[in-house]
Length: 289
Image 1 (cartoon, rainbow, N blue to C red):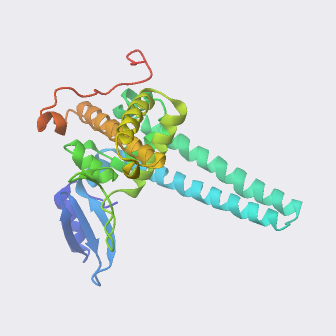
Image 2 (image 1 turned 60 degrees about the vertical axis):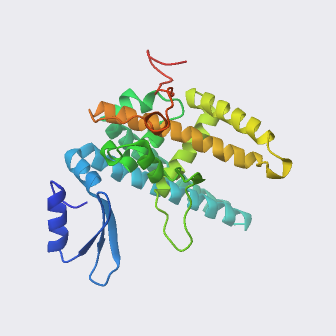
Image 3 (image 1 turned 90 degrees about the vertical axis):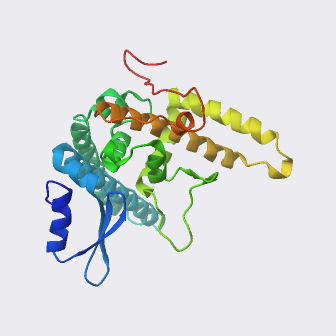
């Protein structure tokens, strides 16, 4: 992280260090070395949010390392299984299990507890995310650390684009051949895990998932047989619609909690719709169950 206090300091420090800076869009810049190789892409609003909030810095650090340890644990487990199939001795198997699996699992859980400690300093966790069924410390840490600040997105569409679930000219957001994806792969994966959690654990978003899926299925049956979508395709469309509903609620509540203006949803502001599904919670005194 660049040790600065505001956006102007960020730009000045990068130039002083002899690196080139290229404006990409909005508050997003790309830092390059003299040979043109990318150093990293950074968002000024995220940098400033981390300077203002020590817990956000720690949360992003512990969150990133927790998932690094998780990947290592899974990789070690797969290697252990492969060696076991090849007839490795019981003594070696025990050593790998005790050293890798138990050791990495313990470290992973310690990092998860550290994530929760810093997550609990955020109003958006205490007053909203924690009260949504299916969102635990891991997914909550992912959502908060990846997005970092609601100032990044003034409207739902901008957040949908960042998450890779937007519709552009009636078509779903896709990566163009030969170009890097213009969304956060990390956030998109987190939202898929979140949809899996809702399907398994239920709650308000599972209810809307079921409603959306029923409508998609009914609409699909009205099409000629050759044009009908597969069950997997219908499920994908339903998940996308459900996570977009959640993202709209998430952004609205986070901006409200930080006293930022909240724009009306696109269908209300531009399409003349008069009703929307408001944010809700599954747990607590004000739960909507």
